[in-house]
Length: 359
Image (cartoon, rainbow, N blue to C red; front, side, top):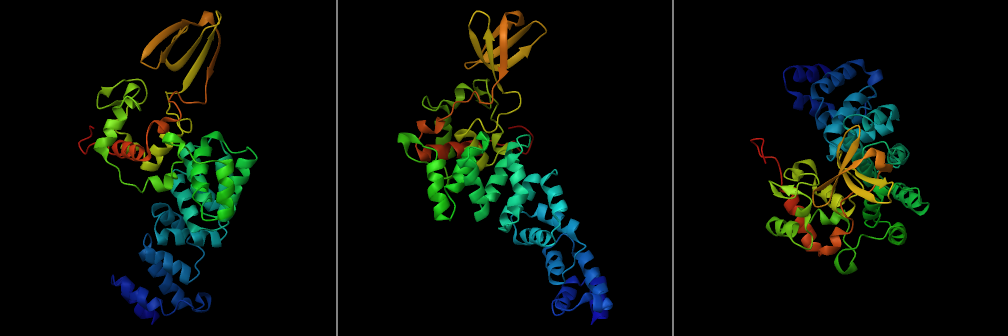
């Protein structure tokens, strides 16, 4: 049979070889060199496919971990990708797993870890959320992953209770813990990290639920430029609005709906580079507050809301401080009902770069 398997694989009949191997998956490969040769030949020919993962699992192959990681990173939300990560965890190859969460595809590595539902991920991902130097998106993804596991959700709740949870993770953690399936954790989380309130102080649904809702992007545009919400007073979309904060003409290309909700509900969690808020204290007791517009050896220019730029001599300054808070106001969702918010995000998610390269 082994000769037939090899022949099938060599003649591009890999499916036939896989079918034949499925009948041998309980065999001891070390005691059957011919079968091992056939198995390894088919494994090489199926790398990058779900069949590869199945073969590695069924024949308990231990020297394919890098290929398993590569597959998991490119298929983080698919069953075969999750199975590939489970095999890595079963092999205790934590060095390789850590390479994944610290590499260029960190978000995918964290996502697939969460999808495994394995308790092991708690000790792997706890350092990620504790590392304030890491990208906030990766840390928020780690919160989401931890919330998929009871021990992980319990850890997040413990950190929140002990006030050891970073401020830029509190919204994400609140949203995740208020949506977990463990009633004791969910009940306590509602006290420690209450849900974000919308219009009339009504609790908003978790982000995980909001992203599933379909909005009306045409009405969302009206919400964006409405006097009540007035996003256009600080942002431009295709030339319309005030050029103060980041331009949003292609924001739907940069952020998914979950990221858009997070940016609206907790603007302090992810501040765009170049849009950090500065506070200047002057010798005469006055203060300036806004974005750093320009700086020379002698003076600094601060751009305030409304696009007003003021210049201050450095010799008149007592102190300057870059704040951790965004210049975008918090509580914006309280000016909208839930459907308005959903429509606004639908509109923002539709703002994408065109195929021709211009919005």
